Length: 178
Image (cartoon, rainbow, N blue to C red; front, side, top):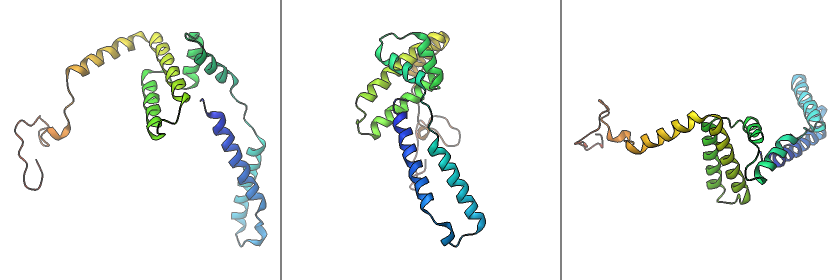
């Protein structure tokens, strides 16, 4: 959402280049069937419309993001609108977005700079908003965390492939099978 205007500008630029390329093609000199020429003309017409049509930015979204980033405790109504508009309505949605953000940081070699801090801060505020709206989720989440700490996850390789029980004295044959 923070970079959507940049992406939209790039798409608009590419659309204009494709439309210009299709304009320069002389279809009469090419040996193509009439059906193919009609398809190309249809695509060209669609690119002309797309070139002429510029989408209006979502000014309310821009304003809400700016307020949520600037204020320490933004209005819950603003956070609720952001949550709905960005489709981050549940804790799971926020977890997915957070993990995607971390993947982006890893793949970008930390070149995100201030964007990472801005998005992280916004995700924390949205998480607080979602937890306030759904207090039962907060108690369930804390219960799940305490359960996870009590029981370790046993890898499948440590279980018998037939009975699926934990192997106590595994034997490995020369082929490498258990």
